Image 1 (cartoon, helix red, strand yellow):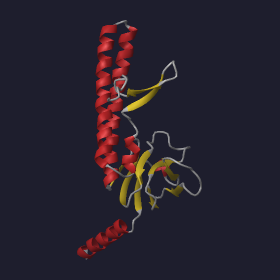
Image 2 (cartoon, helix red, strand yellow):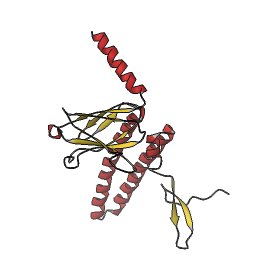
Image 3 (cartoon, one colour):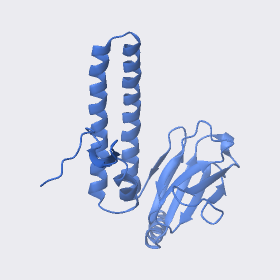
Image 4 (cartoon, one colour):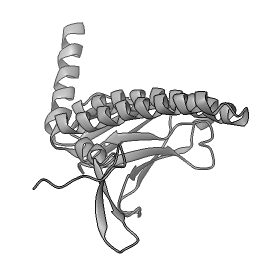
Length: 214
């Protein structure tokens, strides 16, 4: 009997993998969300009745199914989402396990696993960078400009490591929804309009002009 149950579960999972659809299986932490609605919203593009899906949370669970390969946000009804972290999820074929909580997670497919790692790294980065910026503000308030400048340089270096991590992750993925999401997050250059009307190409990290090769 146990063997048959395992076979049935394996066949069910295999069917989900091969039907070309993204099956999102979600759990919501907190009894207060029972009976509330959760939404699957395209990250970009129009948000209409045709593109936004919603279901009711029952027994702390919900499920979505989509065959559109794109980035989505999973959101609790805005009237009840205080203290709940919105979640990015990639709609790619396979089963995605989702937990909605103060810190939300999504794993189960290659791109969502990579997105989860990037999200964890991003949260650590943002938390530490915030601490450094608050420390800089405190030092400036005490007119300790030398130490403030030193910590600012450390913060800039710390942020550069994170930017390069994001760039490399996008480069390694080569293509796909997550690649497209990450690749333009930290461009290497930007255009700067000069007072005389000319436009210069600047390095986005050093803010110095990129000299053209002759």
